[in-house]
Image (cartoon, rainbow, N blue to C red; front, top):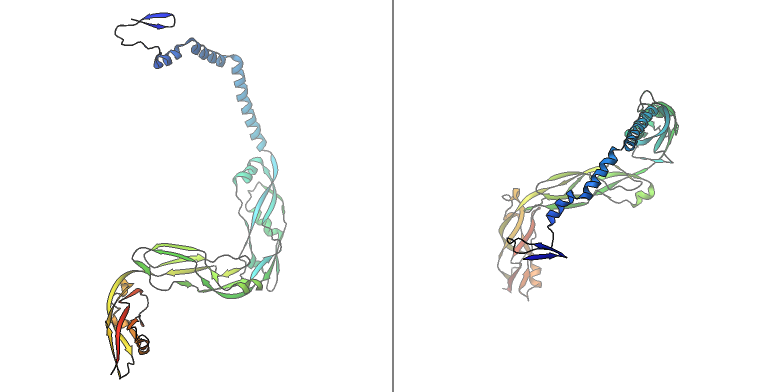
Length: 362
C-alpha cells in the first residue's frame, strides 16, 4: 500500500496500520536543534562575542566604571556644606498655660565636613529633637521666655561628630509666649463597648477613677464643656473583672489633668435560682375577706455565683396595697411585681404574672 505526500510516493511499512500526513511534533522539535539555520545563528552569536572590537568595548566600560568609582570616592574626601533640620519639641507645658504666637517647630543648621560625613547626615542619620522644657523656663508671673543661642548651639553640637563645623543656624534664639488658661472640674463618662463570654454578666457598677478631671481652657470653651468622654474602648469576651487605662478624647484648645483614667468592669459568672414567695397585702380592713389564687408565686432570677447561698426568700417581697385590690375588684385579676429585691440580680421572672382574687365583705 502507498501513501501520497503531494507528488511524492512513499511506500508504507506493512507493520503500520495507517499512514499519517502530520509530522511527529516531538521529532520536529529534535530536528529544530539540528537544523542548519539554528546552528548558523548560534555560530553567529559566538563569533560576535569573540570579536576583538566587542572585547575592547567591554574592557573600556569596566575601566570607565572603575574610574568613576575612584573619582567619586576621591570627591567625597573634599569638604562641602549642607543644611540639616533639627526638630523642636516643647515639653512640660504647665496645664494652666497655653503657648501663643508662632513657635518654631524646627531649627535649620548649616554645617561643613567631608562628603562621607555629610552623606551620613543626609541619608542615614535621624537627629533627636531640641527639647525645650517650658516649665523650667517659665518665670513667676511672666508671659514670655527665651531659649538662648548658647542652648541651641550646645544641643546641635552634641549630635555632630568632632570634625563637623557648625557654621550657622536659624532661628538663632527661640522666644516662647504663653497665656493663662481657666480651670474647672468636669465628670468623666466612659465610651465603652463591652461583650461577655456566655454565662457571664457585669456584676456591679462600672467605675471610672478618677470620676472627675480638671479641665484647662479658655472661658468660651469651658462654658460648653459639661462632661469629658474617654477614648472609645472595646472590651470583648470578658470572663472576669478587668481594669483598663484609657485616655480622654482630645479637644482642640483643651488640656486635662490627669490625661488618663482607669476603668474597672466587674464581671462574674452568673447562675439561675428559683424561690417561692408569698403574696402579701397591706391593711385589709376587718370587714373584708381577701382570697388570692394562688397565694404564692415562683421567682426565677440570675445572680452571681458567689452570692448563690446568701440570697434567700427573706431578701424578696411582693406586697400589694389594699386599694389596688379594690380598683381591680370587678376584673378579679391583678398583675403582681416585686416590691423588694437585693442588688446585682438580673432577669427576675414571676410565674404567674397575674393572680386571681375574691374580695368579699363580711
